[in-house]
Amino acid sequence: MVPTDQIIVSITYIISVHVSFFAVITGLIGNFINILVFTQLKLFRRNQSAFYLTIGSIFDCLQLIFTTLIRATTTTVGYDPTQTSLIWCKLRIYLVQFIATISLGTVCFAAIDQYLSTSYHNQLRQISTFKLAQRLVGILIILAALYSISFPIFEEIRPSLGCATYNPSFNYFYSFVHFCIILGILPMVVSSSFSFLAYQNVRRIIRLQIPLVRRRLDRQLTAMILVRVALFVITTSSFVSLRIYQINSPANPNSDSYSMIIVQFIKTIFTEIYTINYVVFDF
Image 1 (cartoon, helix red, strand yellow):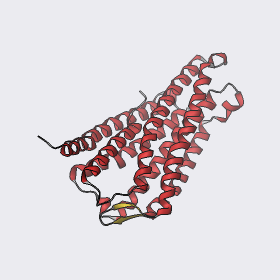
Image 2 (spheres, rainbow, N blue to C red):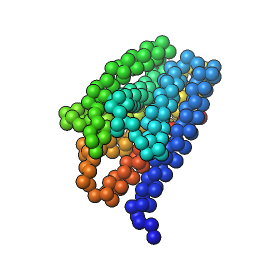
Image 3 (cartoon, one colour):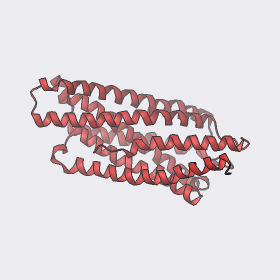
Image 4 (cartoon, rainbow, N blue to C red):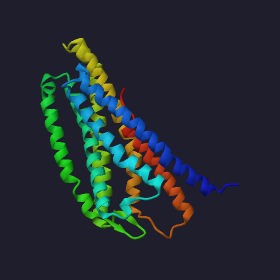
């Protein structure tokens, strides 16, 4: 009879490799479809919300490549270059945080813009413009690039512990400010609040003197953003909680092997759930 710990290890491996590769393939295809539709269909051209969703899909592809694909490949070959190469250790954390910040930012921008563009008040609708969307995305990219510089500064490699941040003060910021607030509570509250308000606007959009095609477009985009936000909230909340626990409870080489297997299994499950945030597409 196969021991329980070996069964759990095998399941963890299958999820880490096979499920991850499947997620990468389907995610890249789905996001490519999003990009193609939003950029080629005349209906979505120069639409602010569609522009945010397009940028989000581009960075979702990058997130799948630099997190899920690399993680699955590392597990398959049994070698992680971040544990031996300080340059790759620092570069990868920078890219991951940079991409994640932009991806979440576009979700928030899309929800806010959809609320403005469907507003009953003409003054609010006039705020929503394609030029403003381009400027906001440009500012977001610049701020994300500057903000992410702090992460590789504190990232280092230690024997038996690997590539991670070991500065207690930065770990406090990393867990309770970065993960809990910047990647967790703040975007979840902003995106869910404005997407709900946009949904309320769409319900009474019939009263506005707006062409039928525009009404249908607003309903479709609002539905897309609602699904995207709901998925983001569901998948992110559990993963953020896990990462906060990991950062504040570094791996102990003296821990019981079975406990470490269980922890790794739970981590893998939560990580794959979070990956769904970048995989599921709107069409």
